[in-house]
Amino acid sequence: MAVDLLLGLQWGDEGKGKIVDVLTKNYDIIARFQGGPNAGHTLEFDGIKHVLHTIPSGIFHKNAINVVGNGVVIDPVIFKKELDKLAPFNLDIKSKLLISRKAHLILPTHRLLDAASEAAKGKAKIGSTLKGIGPTYMDKTGRNGIRVGDLEFTNWKEKYHSLATKHVKMIDFFDSKIDYDLNELETEFFDAIKTLKQLTFIDSEEYFHQVQTEGKTILAEGAQGSLLDIDFGTYPYVTSSNTTAAGACTGLGVAPGKINQVYGIFKAYTTRVGSGPFPTELFNSYGETMARVGNEFGATTGRPRRCGWLDLVALKYAVQINGVTQLMMMKSDVLSGFDKIKVCTAYTFKGKTITHFPYNIDPENVSPVYTELPGWKDDLTQMTDASQLPVALNHYIQFLENELKVPIKIVSVGPDRKQTILRN
Image (cartoon, rainbow, N blue to C red; front, top):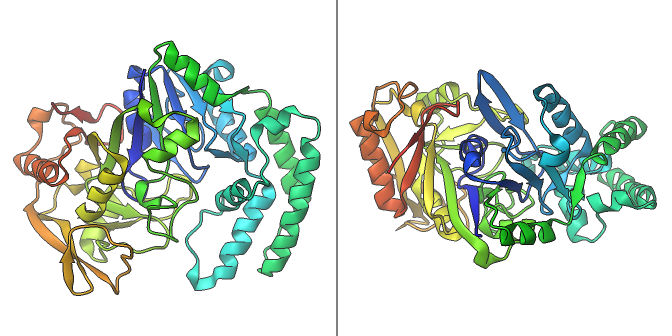
């Protein structure tokens, strides 16, 4: 049985959590394959808004098993808070939530290192969420990390104290003058570890091998977005993991040949949080309207998102490197009311017009080339069928499909799971 992937194609915040929630009924297993609690997947149904940070977005479906894969980094403190918020919903967490033993742990000193490093950069800061994700992945690749499976052995605290001591020396090196009480942070951390140890740990690569032989259906859920990929994103303003399709193979232990459908999610416009180049960013009333109507604030950090027109050069690039087979367009309703809508179809790069995504998209090298399309006035939020979509929106969709060469199968017209239109 093949594995389907669900990926963000922009700079994150595309609405992956909602679509995983919508699709979960078609799958036996939902698996998160990378990233840490800097991701905030928002789900809204029955009048309640839920924000998940580490736990896969299928957790509210009784029949789905949810797996946190080996490519994920877990902050036990945030994880415990997330579990506490789920407690009123009487979910069978013990049997429905499985954790890979090979997933790495975010320590309190990882968060402190993140803050010290970012503070030391000054104006050159990358816009880290300060959750300790970067330093944790650095320890992973540096072969110093502590993994979930280590918690099953008696010497894990020795490993912890050895690594934490090393981190404190590194924090002092940055001389960033951050204030912290490590004893207080460690008390909270060790308490959260007790909660984590009550969950079910698995050898996830063997688990996925077995369930595939049993014919189980699997949906792998990515975090952040393709343009934040450590290799293929807008480096150095990226995250610390592989957010693209290849990351699902290494983040779960699934063979490349087992990947089937690749669902790519994008907003009808573009947003970005934190620092980094953004060719189509708007600094006028259009951008302000997108931010206000779209409620563009980070689900995890609350930071305002920068907004701009859809960038097809970047989107084509993401479709290409991920091998996307189906597209899903989110927040179409946010563009309702615009007289005209622009789409970036090319860049002017060092005086030449190009249609591919170049090595560097800093504003001194790149400026967007736009195609203008008619807007629509209709309120989309109450629409339930593709036949109800306004002519101008259908024209917009068809234009994008012609450019991207991939069908747009889902159009989201609001945050609720019910506000989702399927297209043939």
